[in-house]
Image 1 (tube, rainbow, N blue to C red):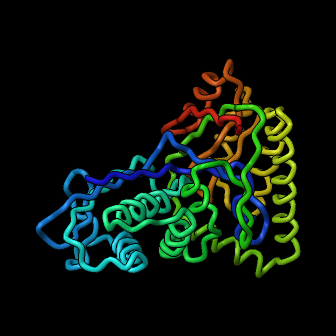
Image 2: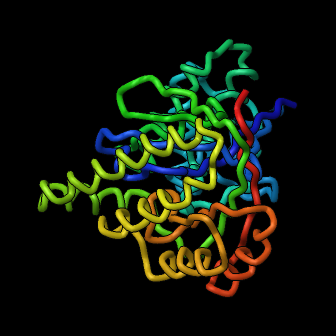
Length: 310
């Protein structure tokens, strides 16, 4: 049996602005992963979850999840694999429509597993290109940041249309990742920001440029060995995302609760209007912030350490 997995991701700074040419910083979030396994089968290809439920099957399209079926067919086409007699099992720990890059993680693990099964060498660049195509199925016009950080599984500064740059992190720091419990498909807030840019081009462009400036400041802070100085930038980034209309009362409440409990910084992460909030904390105060986030409505909280780069 062939097994592959890929991590979730979180955006530290720059969501939405990255769709419109500004830089963003994204981090892999290995606490949550998507897992794909492939075994031989005497029947036509079927894509199932580990509980046995059918997710996608090219010969039974009416019983398939249409997005997962399109993802599966896209990967098979790009790898030039025709009618394989295999069983594909999916187990994903990553919540969907939550800002974690669930679709990109599934597609990454699926692409690598199918390539290995076919005995086909595949580079990270080709995996990234294939996964980006599948992202278009889910999100319409993705920036490319999700697939890039998930495929490379390292902290990256991403600007659309250019090669991603590794992020220098001189000192480890701690984040709490709080799931609001609200869900919103990525394409909805992305489309809303695009519409806002069309209706109010000057004001919206200024907000996007201000977010890009925050990203550049954050890169310098990360390289300085003073990660708690990111906190002020996080609050500013969240406020600007609020001006773009992609926050929500619940997300704002979670950010405020984290700050009141002593977080150095907090912001929404991902497309917004639901999903997650990230909070920058000291180890000594993380329990207090986690309790405050829970009291404010978070349904699940993960504690993760972002490691310094070598």
